[in-house]
Image (cartoon, rainbow, N blue to C red; front, side, top):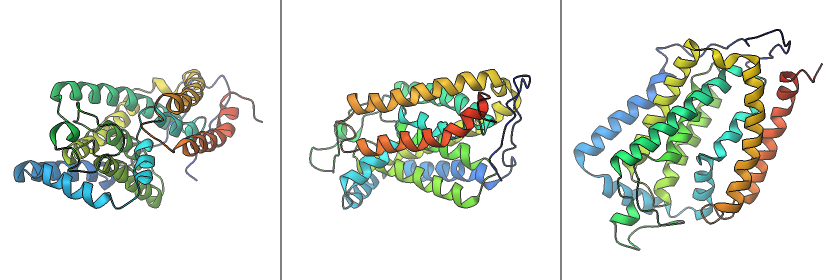
Length: 277
């Protein structure tokens, strides 16, 4: 019902867009409102460090592998895989995703450089908390993994899709954020900031995509499909070879994600390139 079957006639210059949720929807404003209130309370009470210790200790009872796999879902390189299923089906989401990726990348890089905040391994005594993976030291705020996860969740939650799907994706995004605290490399304020920034970027991207429809051009969508496919393969290869020490034991998950997302994308891409009748 919600998957859009697009026209593949080359004469069709611009593909149709599917409407997002209304401007006053709780799906649009619930997450940023919660994040702002939580950040305010956290800063006023000054319990960022104590909350980190509590959450980090509590989550250490779960396996390290669980948190590593969840962190992988928020990796900025791997996120391109999740665009594959929408190729040839939802050109509006593809265009929103591209705009969001550019804005989020600039925002996260700029804010990390601006604040240059120290991470827990650089601020706390060694062995006073549970650390998984490399002891990252700097550029703590905001959490890039959390931002990425909430950009994706925000884009999906602002579409007219089943509420259960939205809730599931939002819960996954929350656990990606929590995994950064469980790994011992981000403070709670970093995660809340990442959630706020990611969702705000999603709102901005949806708004821009509705005003500026250049990305719905069928030629743009075809070029995007080729680039996304190539970048998805490169992302898995790069993570497999260069970041295995950051995400140990996740090779099967990387391969499965690529296989599943690419397999789902095939029918849409065939239609997009006029190869399926």
